[in-house]
Amino acid sequence: MKRSDRIRLDDAVSLRPEAFGALGYSYRDRQLFFIDKRLLPFVESRGSRPLGEIADELTAGGVLQKDALPRLMTVLEGLRRRGVLHVVV
Amino acid sequence: MSSYELLHRGLNAPICLTWEMTYACNLLCVHCLSSSGRRATDELNTAEAKALLDEWAAMKVFYINVGGGEPMTRPDFFELMEYAIARRIGVKFSTNGTLVDAAAARWISTTDYLDVQISVDGASSEVNDAIRGRGSFSRAWRAMELLAAEGFTFKVNHVVTRRSFEQLDALHASVTGMGGQLRVTRLRPSGRGRAVWDALKLTQEQNRRLYGWLRAHRDVLTGDSFFHLSALGAPLDGLNMCGAGRIVCCVDPRGDVYACPFVLADEFRAGNVRKSSFAAIWAGSPLFDRLRGWEVDGQCRTCGAFGRCHGGCMAVKHFTGVALDDPDPECVFAPDAGPTATIIPLNLHPRPIRPAPS
Image (cartoon, rainbow over all chains, first blue to last red; front, side, top):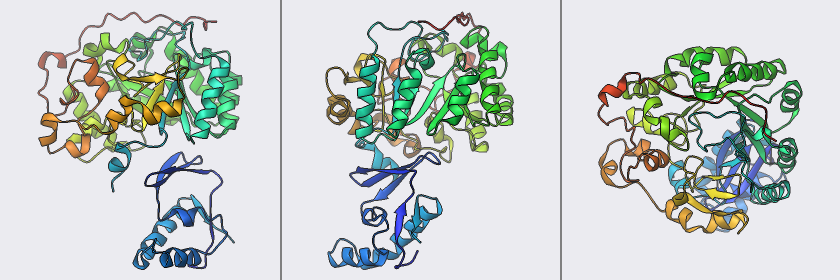
């Protein structure tokens, strides 16, 4: 996953807000998954902005520590591999 | 944070919501959790059921587990299922299979977001029919064949008992051979299950072997039934926790909301959807609030396996008269019960299949 990537949720995925962020469910493979609240701005971006731009904004606002970004990118990549989200081309 | 810590305090909506649509059933299984057979006169009508589904959709309930009774006996069964799915609520419905004909099999296989599990309690009619009624095995098998012919991956739910335990391998082979998936669940002493608990519950030796069997058959689903067995070693797949009132609840045919489908008892009733909204009951019931702050106490807390089994199943404790803070009656560290390890003669009389009640 690169800073320039834009992402969107798979059409068969639904998110529900929870105290920790969101609970997700894929109607395709019938699996539940957790989304940490720091990831929400990325997974809910609907391909509108590059990941790097969202990250910079969150970092500038003090919402996200700069050193947390690589770990979040790894989680997003894991969700992409599961088919939960897609890179917009 | 572990999934246990995330879920223990509850969620904005249940992730395992069982809706028992009706108490009507054309079978009379000896271990039925809800003592089903006859339709209750005050079951939710179609409009009330649709209002409930609207509410669940607004709460973003992802899917519901539909059961009964036999849900297919409801004249509005197909209408309500399609109503749910149109609102993006996935449906997993349990059936005894007797009412699945070619048309129903076609409907199941061509409907999105729909899963079905057929109840089969043995790999032979001799074992299954002693529990579910004469003729029920062949009818369930016929339903599986119809679904397999449609290329549909159905599930078979098997409540494993002392009588059926040795047939696990055979049932697994048959179901997977037809393209289905086996789900094995725990017998509970709930409903009519109370009367057959001592005769049908697994022996301690069978419980230990079941743990190994499930670890070796990772394709077999359990619905998190056997988390008390995770005390034996590496945890079984699943959340390994009691989700009652936290992530799990049950709405019965009259609209009563219970903490879990296995504790249909006054002490575990949180409210009724005719008197207040489901959302209000889920978020604000004193019972659910208490369960979300509660953990098993007592001797379990000093057990090295507590982090894997969390004290076991609340329903089994309740219906066997055990304090909720005591270990699960089938705790793997409990001493063997001796003579009960032998086969107890059964004197069960399930009713043969009868026409669907109107």
